[in-house]
Image (tube, rainbow, N blue to C red; front, side):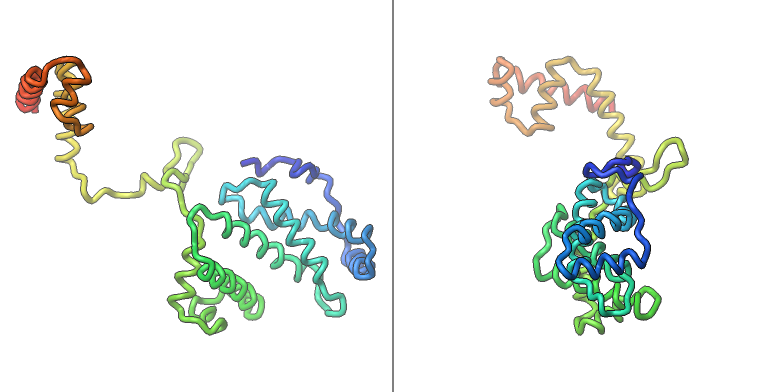
Length: 257
């Protein structure tokens, strides 16, 4: 993806505005009175906040423009719902709103379909985790989240695992500037061993020594699962000829191996 590009959704991120706390306070008060211009200025002045938040999700390979737009929806909701009478910084309220909106988008666009009830529990669990983290200044355990929600630990754990983005076998897990190591390189095949590997090599070498017609017949017969009659019709010879060629090819392969 293009996570270092300057322009996102037509917005030049190198020229994003920065508002002071006092400017935000004044604009929020004006917005509450229905001042559309103040509302737009407040949105423009917090786009840098949206940009900084969506950087957390760059490892998901999502389109940055899409994430930015979703983050802006969260920002607008935060502006429209912020209570100016509370002694709370706007960013303190806006950050979890933006994160929640992005997470909802990622959850609903996950390639693995998850039931609505499970997704709802996962979303409530994420909200609870954020709330407990703020209240206790530390990451809560699954048990603490479950107790906070009044749910079983197993249900909460299963719901949160269900919305985790699947990892590709070809995701890079290490790169020292040269060749990368991928997830698939870290997996072992318990059904494979050196003996099977060597037999496979020997079979391939034996197949190379067959004639083109013999190789075609063996491939169609044992790799594609076709009958001798089907092979005969496809390559234009009799079934007896197919049988004879197949038998001779198998004998030669056995001798080679």
